[in-house]
Image (tube, rainbow, N blue to C red):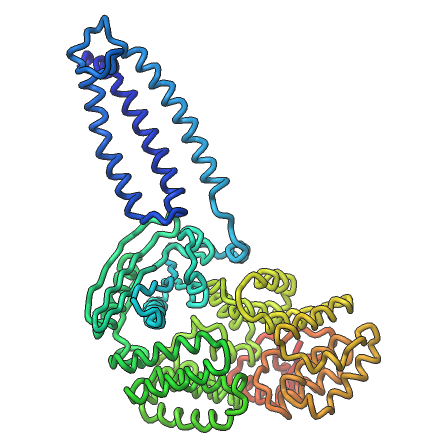
Length: 617
């Protein structure tokens, strides 16, 4: 045996093995770095790995059987030991191994410290908040439309969203919201970078090819840590199998990640349909709803929802989304608000008849109860909606969060908003919601940092810039020039504070002049809306007029029926919440009765022992 090992050493078999392994490893590292940039299909790297593994025993066999001589390659048995140059060949292999090890070290260092994608601000923000990347986390990227008709893109987007919605039902799986995952649509990004930016361990991507009644869907589950494929599936079916395919893909993901998913077709879960034509109209409506480039998009979305329910009158989800679409008309289609309200009443009646226990129906009713300040009934309706299957986790402005905000239960509202922000890091709406919570809970420095981060997120920044102004007004000793600059920025972005631009023009350095203008605006017919009065209260508090602040709050919430009562719990520069007039507002909007009946006084008020009175801090 010792002579055999000696012969292996003499024939440089060990050195060939080591050199082959080093060179192969370097080749794989370079390929793994370069291939994604060249759009090389992932299977090519897998093929290269297999070929290198197959070549290893062949290289050893050749090293044993043949020898390199000055006259060329000859069989080992044909070369005498006296004429062999294997020692010189072995020395050359030593040089190659040394150089290879040095190059391997360089590749590892470059990959770790140079080519490693830097953490994005979104990921950094989440890391600061203590959120890591859990193994059971996933983002569903928009499936690519490979159909000859590019207008079929709404179908591939809709299918991706439906799979996302199925996975979002899993309590133990963190699913990135649609806004963030769809922000990578059309972008050729390294999947490892995508995983970092979305703070997820897994990615689901794929493609859709639709031709007549034939459908081919390919789905791949990616490990975002290294960009490797966990599995890939192709489905060749008829179009009417699309609902079953959605289930199969979601089930395959849940099985792989070892999480439980009890899925059903759209007809069995979440008030859906199995009518393909109605489903097609629904997807078209969703596409226009997401687009929202103009009021015409909202009108077109509503029309497609109407066509969907005309084809399937039992399509509860389409009825519910039509109701919500018409709600947006109050802002974006103001000349048709009366028409929208009448249609909403009819839809509500239809839903109560069609599906009185549906989470959609109950959620709509909970929202109506909130607007009517019927807090106890709204709380019961929200609990019933959750029992019926409502899932508020994907909606940053969901009814449950609004309820907790309005009733002063900011701790519960903050926890919900943070979870949604973490699962939708590239959503401007999610960032805006999180900035609201940071202000309301007095974390203004964190709010400012999130505002800076949000500047790089795509979308209309008017609301976010306007809220940055509110955060600025809550700070002491702010430079008036900075306030004027922020007002101009918010106005350019389409914020709703334009009415105060002229009212306060040039008066931020003169407190008395500013307050005189605000008092005049308080009685101006142009500012008699709940939102204008709310902004007036912000400015009045900034300039230290508690009387005007409380008068504006009362006008906004009691006289004009403002619904965003949660903003009452913001930090004030003056002693507003401890004032008896603040407590009167709480009584007028029904909160005190709710507090006494529920026993839950929120985070800022509490009953006084041995008295019918209460205090707020």
